[in-house]
Image (cartoon, rainbow, N blue to C red):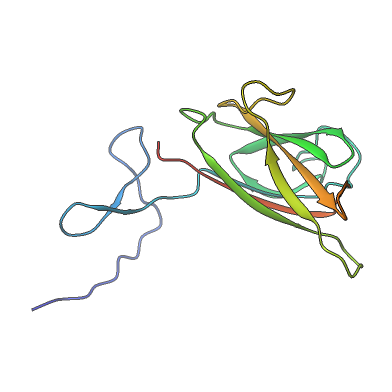
Length: 144
């Protein structure tokens, strides 16, 4: 007999410094929590962007964003990732227009904007040109 139940709690806490793990009944990991996310205004103008100055609308584990030039931003983590094998995904939207924009992760250890455990860079592009974009949404996932 299978019994379905719902767990309703205010806080889920790991018994170690690692994040809680979601497993099925056989112990196979079935999911992970997002490690960081941010919603920011790329047209804000005052670098670094923060929640306090309004450049970051809301965020988790993102302390600030540096404006590195037209359509180029460095996202700084509040708590560093354990390695550089994380995955960032995102999108952008240009307000009040009939065209879209693309948010593109960039950088590796050999670039001018290297991916590190503390930060990574993205660019926003519209019509094949760098452009500051008003609405940017990024989520970061990592195994550790």
